[in-house]
Length: 414
Image 1 (cartoon, rainbow, N blue to C red):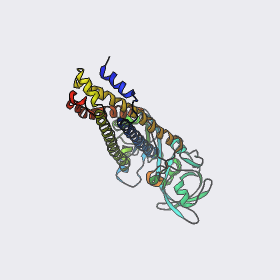
Image 2 (image 1 turned 120 degrees about the vertical axis):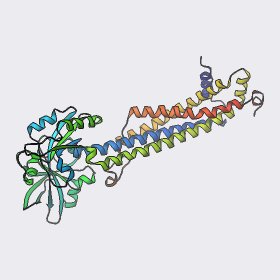
Image 3 (image 1 turned 90 degrees about the vertical axis):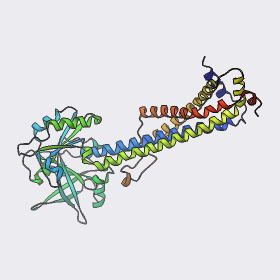
Image 4 (image 1 turned 90 degrees about the horizontal axis):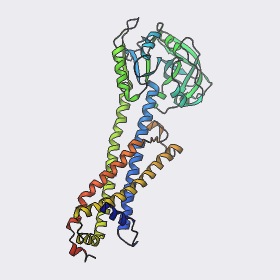
C-alpha cells in the first residue's frame, strides 16, 4: 500500500476538532481553487462563444472564400467576372468545397416620402444558401430569389427598416444612379437582424438577375462566387486548391479570376478577435496564481498544525520524502474537491446563460445581444489537468519546510 496516500487520506477524512485552524484554511483553499477554475471555464467559454459567433456572422455575409475579378480586389469600382455553369462545376469539384453560390453587388438609394438612405444591393440566385438569413429573420419571409427574372422583392435589415420606418409588406422606391437614373419599386418581403452594424446598416438582398441588369453586365457576368468549405480548419488548404486551379485563369470576356479568404476580406474583424486570446491568457494566469497562493498558505497552515504528527513520523523512521509526499497527497485531495466545485459552478453558469440568456450586452457595441458561451469539453479537461498539476507543482517548494522540523522539538510543540 502507498503509505503517503494512506496517511493523507486518513488526515483528510478526519473531522476531529472543529476548532482546528486547518479547517478554515482547507475551506479557503478549496474555495480558491474552485472559484479560480470556475472563472477560467467561464472565460474560455465566453471568448470561444464570442469568437465563433462573430466569425459565423461575418462568414454568413461573405462565405469562406470569394472568387472575383482580380481588378475588384484593388478598386472600389465594380468589375464583373463570368461565373457560368462550367466555372460553377470547376469550383464545386475542388477538394474541400461544400457549396458554391453566385452574387452581384450594386449601389442604390432607398427612398420613402420622408427620408432616403444609400444602400448596397446584393443580388443572389436560387442556389444561395439562406440558412444564415433564416436564423436572423425577425419579420416577414425570405423571397425566392431568381437569376432569370425580377421578383421585385427585397430583404432588408432591421436597422434600415427602423431608419426608414418600414415593415414587412411595405413598398418602397429604389433609385440607381449611373449615367442615367433608374427607378425600381420593391416590396419588402422580410427583415433580418444580425447586430453586425457594418453589414446591417447598408446591405439589402435582391434578385441576382436585377443586380446584374442594373450594372449593365453581359450574360454570365456577376461580381463573383462565394465558396463554403466543408471544414473551416482546412480553409487554407481549400484556398490553395482554388489558387492552383482557378486563379490567374481568364473567362470568355478576358477577365482574370482571383480569390481571397474571409480573413483577407475582413482582416480588422479577425485581428480584433485574435486579440481576445491575450485577455484569456492574462485571466488564466491570474486565476492560477490565486489558486496557487491559497493552496500554499493552506498547506503551510496544515504543516504547522501537524508539527507533532510530523515529529512522531520522523521518530518512527519516516523519511522527509515520505512525509512531503503525504502532505502533497493531502493537497491533491483539497485541489480535487476544489476542481469539482469549480466545474459545477463554471459549467452551471455556462448552461444557465445558454438556456436563459440572462447576461445581456449592448448589441451596437458587441454585435450580440446576449453573452455567447460555448462548452468545449477537451479545453475544460485541459484546464482541470493544468490547474491540478500547476497547483501541486507550486506546493513542492513549501513542502520542504518539513525537512526543518526536528522530532525532539516538534513532539513538545504546542
